[in-house]
Image 1 (cartoon, helix red, strand yellow):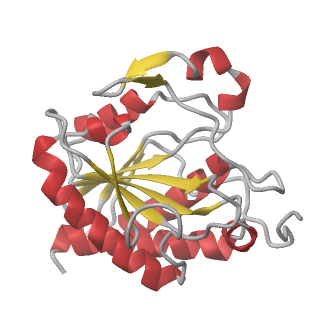
Image 2 (cartoon, rainbow, N blue to C red):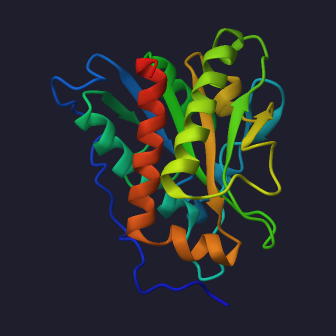
Length: 245
């Protein structure tokens, strides 16, 4: 059965430019945060581009994928983009300069290697890649995916673990979403197969905010209110990391 759609989130996002201007005087003044809304709405249209092999720091993988979707057809790419826009606005309001890896949900890519490079080039103080999982329908919850040392990212392993724990704590408390019942331990999952963290030189984590294939999660994550709450919870975790709170 498809999840309720009556209060579905809009198809636009507050994110309009690659760099979001910071508001002066907030607790994150002087900080740079890179936000990566996973996938892209146009990826379905160009399989040859997104299936092209790239080197993820350990092995070959595809440039990108189309992402998951709810049984009702709401795409992960749209969810990621919306949450990223709300998060960008929240962080900018606290004084952070925000850099986004994509600014529309109608394009293709960029490749996951380029997404890492954008955060690196910005010298971000923290970076996050926003996703929603396509897990087993019986499973529920969120998981924070943390990097495993592979050489180029060795210096960020400790800070990324701290960032991941901060986000895990605030996300669960802020959204009421349980930690994943099928991925990771207590909401944390080290991953060595993701170019976005293998190639990062700035503290970075991924988050699978919920399981799009689970009916309970899907009914929540398609709504504007849940997406905005997810963004606020992520902002709280990033702020805790950057301020040491």
